[in-house]
Length: 147
Image (cartoon, rainbow, N blue to C red; front, top):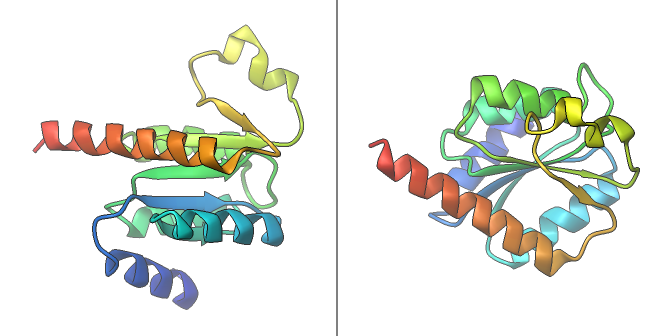
């Protein structure tokens, strides 16, 4: 794991019991805006430029509550592929995808039920916060049931 990623995980872990969200977005301005808005609303936030960085952070963050990922990112996989990876490696962590471009592939019945819902850009931050909180609460409740 990179030094920067390791420092981010350490910082987030030290912040307490607020929901931990990983924002994976290659557009730095969008990522920073979302991450800052989530921090202002009480979330602990990790940031990744692409799925490769996201996987490093997911692997190093056992208390991760939810991943919020753009679909279209550079690197070895896109956001939908990251969601599939998460489903097999960290099925406890819900994924919310986002995109500014409608993609027929995502709406086809062949893939229905295999991928998380897509949150269209631009998005209402209050609605995004509500959805991320609900996903984090559901994950935490499920984890308590497994202890």
